[in-house]
Image: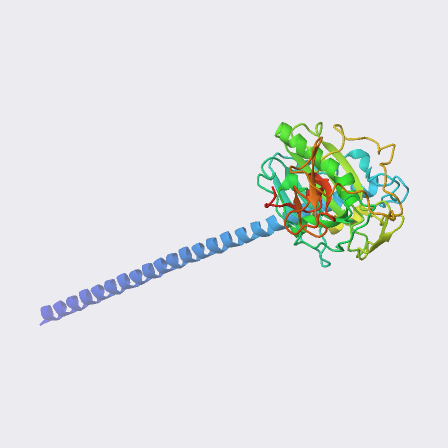
Length: 401
């Protein structure tokens, strides 16, 4: 009986030991499972944190890029405005350009453009400012090269009506029409046609005598050298005037560091013999009075600086304004119309040296090789050079050419 009791006790002890051992393993398994869950949770948290960190980093980079771009633009504007304030001071009027005194343009900043050194490169491009709240053009900026020069036929620009535009004629104006649709970056440099961000209301005098010689020089230089010219044109408006008082033109050739082309000039938007109301574009016969031109403020108002290379004047950019003003038209319009070409047109356009004479009708938007094309009235047709016709925004007639 005693032996049996001891056997029972032994069995009970072994059972208890086995039970305790099983519970311990279960506890350990549960602990291990908890550790595994914790590890999984930690890995998931790490991945989420890494994803959020990458997203934050990307967003930060985008913000930094936009911020840097804005800083660069603000710096360019401040740089140009400060330079203009410091340099355009020849008449003691701070930023104000001297009043027109007989020359279609004056030299600014000793003929040195206000470009930043970081803007010089040989990559061709062109950009145009958005129109302001009055619909006026801002700065036009380009690096002129053969890459952006026109290769096709010139299109019509007659659909564009820049601010202050009036179709008005005077007998004492070359070609009769007072206003041209003036390209900021000339067509021969950019191939731009009816781009409203690149066309302003400009007088015949500013377009042909002021801007065109500089444009021609840039175009000739690029064609001859295959180089590039950094080029900027800034229209200068006084207050809320709809017609610009003039344009600031800057250019410098890139590959030869300005030895080929380099200039900084202000072209007056005036017409000898005509008085212009720059607020509205209205005009009348009278002595020209140039609008006030604060070019420092104009560049600042234009937003991010735009560099527009334009053609230069003489083979070497002038260091002093012309000593003799160009011949002006009479201050009073003649009582009789200017002498016109014969009413019978030649069978072929006349070639006068470097310029071909073409025919214009009284109201049409095309130039012609004959004076009686279509419904043209040959008695009212008149001749100008092809270059002048294109500067006036006329396109070539496909019927007679």
